[in-house]
Image (cartoon, rainbow, N blue to C red; front, side, top):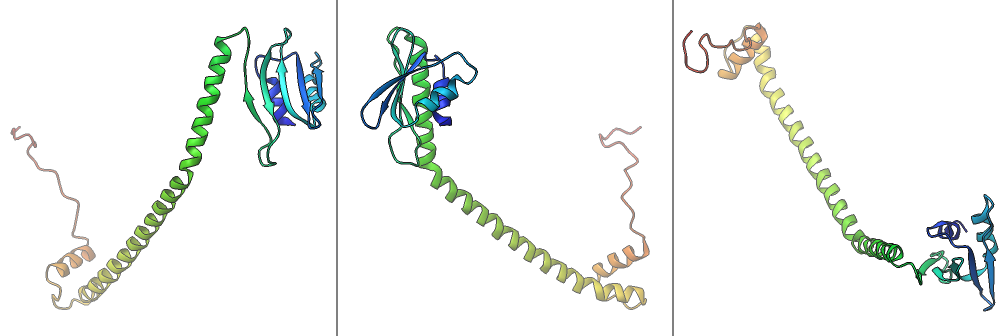
Length: 190
């Protein structure tokens, strides 16, 4: 019902609706001037299998076919104006382009879904790999620095070479951020 009401409200507005019932009978519904004119017209057209929006001069503006399976509530099948021309042609072109775009998106939906799933899987695998490498690096770091730190605290012998010297310097607080050079970096002396 809301689909029919939205279809009725499109520009140009019809003055009446020609309804074809399932039995083959036709009836004409005049669209009034009340605030609820679109709702009333849609309700009066319930049970119709085909609707034609007609203007004051009797020209068919557009046609709505409500037959089909229940998953598709209805579709506009034609829009013509006998005297208008330009505006309805642009509207028809816009409708055709929109339908082509929707059909194209539907055709590619599975490929996009598959690509997204593969990308999500790749990110998951890379994330797990990174976590494993970080754990291994942390275990290695702890196994290398724990004995050196214990030895530095106890004043033991230099067992780690350069690594031991760095650990001792860190523990003693001897490492400080580098100081900037006294001369300018552009090579000119002051």
